[in-house]
Image 1: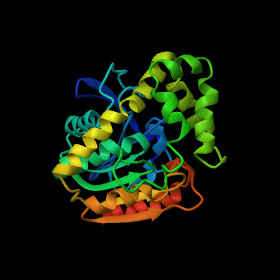
Image 2: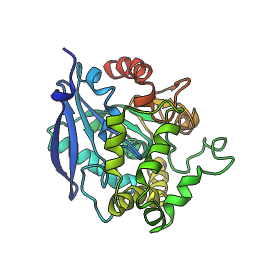
Image 3: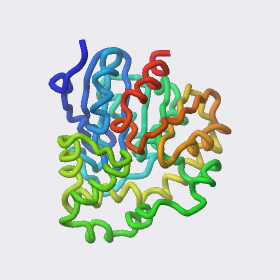
Length: 282
């Protein structure tokens, strides 16, 4: 039977010095879903029901986001990967397929790269892996404007106070080519990112990017990615992530979802499931 919203439970899980809120649904081999900005676990709302027919789905709010601890530090990809491993430990899962998008992609990548015994299969979407070669075409005109805005300590959370709904709404509209997301999900995202402390945590992920890039460079010098991996691109990242992964990955398949914005799980959930299910069940 399909999983319904009522069959998704929320758990408080202690990991790596914080508490995370984790949506849990279904039974079977674990699948860990890692979201990005400006999202919570609800980014996966349209795909969890079908995944939960085959898997035990674990969809946490990342450190500092949603209902997880608003930590003072630890927003680099290395620490986030440790958070993810701790979630698996706390929920009794030694291994999982790991799916990451946006800010969830670098920690998913590091988890698979450094701890392949924990990751059965790896899906990475709509993000770049630090400064690894392969993204030169995407970055030819510079990084997206909000990367610099978010990176200045204390600025964005001050400027945006009182205008969180408009700001989050812009990303949701752009990330779906103007098609938008269901109102309850939009409201949940806006609520999660309202207030200076919520915004501080969100932008801490961007402010940690230089450290994350260095951790990724170090890890790639020491390891190859050996777990079966799928790269999924849409707009705007396209195949840039796939090109970064190709030289360092033993088993890689790449896909581009046509007419799809950055929020792939909400904008084109059926197309995404058409890629995810065969890969994760393989």
